[in-house]
Image (tube, rainbow, N blue to C red; front, top):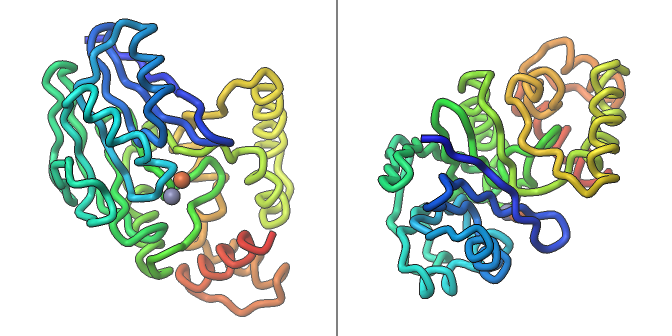
Amino acid sequence: MKTTISPIPIYDDNYVWVIDDGHYAVVVDPGLAEPVDDFLLKNKLTLCAILLTHHHWDHINGLQALYENWRCEVYGPDDDRIPAVQTIVKEGDVVHIKPLELSFTVMATPGHTTSHICFYNDDVLFCGDTLFSLGCGRMFEGTAEQFVNSLNKIKSLPAELMVYCTHEYTLSNIAFVESVLPESDAIQQKKEWAKSLRKRNQPTLPVKLKDELSLNPFLLTDSHSFQQHLNRIYNADVADEVSAFTLLRTAKDNF
Ligand code: ZN
Ligand code: FE
C-alpha cells in the first residue's frame, strides 16, 4: 500500500510527521492537536495511531486532545511524564499499525532524555530529538556514554533510510558544522540547498542517513582524524569517541 509522509509545522521549528494512505493516518510527536486535526479533516483522514519519542512538551502537548477526539492507539516510552493513555514500548518491540499495514521497530536512544525512543522500519527512521540534520539533541538527562551508544545504534541502521527529525535545525546546524569540520564542497552544497528550501518555507527534512554519516560531526566522533582535528581547533586532548562527543556537544551548546 502506498503511504505518504507529510510535515505539519508547529511552534517555531517543530514538525509533526503524518503518515497516511489516503484513508488512515499515524502521527509522530504531536506537540499540538489543532493543526493535526485540521490536516486530518482537510485530507479526510482517520487517525489510527500516535507514536511518541519522548516526554518533552513540544512533542506531546497535543496528545490528550487527539486521544479524546480519535481514541486511537498511542505508543510511547515508559515515562510517568507522559499522560497514561499509551501502550508502553521498549527496545526491540515491533509496533504494527494494521489499517496502514505498517510496522516499526522500537529502539531505545537515551541521551537527550533518559527514556527517549526511536521508531524505524526498512525505509524510515523517526528519531525525535536524538538526531538532527547535521546535529543532535541537547544532552538534558542522559550521559555522554549513553548518547554515543544511541547514535551508534542509529549509525548501524541501513544507510539508505530516510531520517525524519522533529526540528528544523539544518541551517543553524550548518553554521556550527562549518566551524568544526574542514571546509568541504558537500557542506557548501548542503547549505545552498537548505537556504533555497527555507526561502520557500519548505522543510529540509527528511534527510538520508547516508549523508548524515559523512557530514554530521556528532556521527564522526569515532574517527581518529576527526578527534585530532578537534584537538587542534579546540586545543584539547580527546582520544576516544565519548570525550570527542562531550567536547563537541559542549561546543555546540555554547556556539
Ligand atoms: Zn526534546
Ligand atoms: Fe523537541
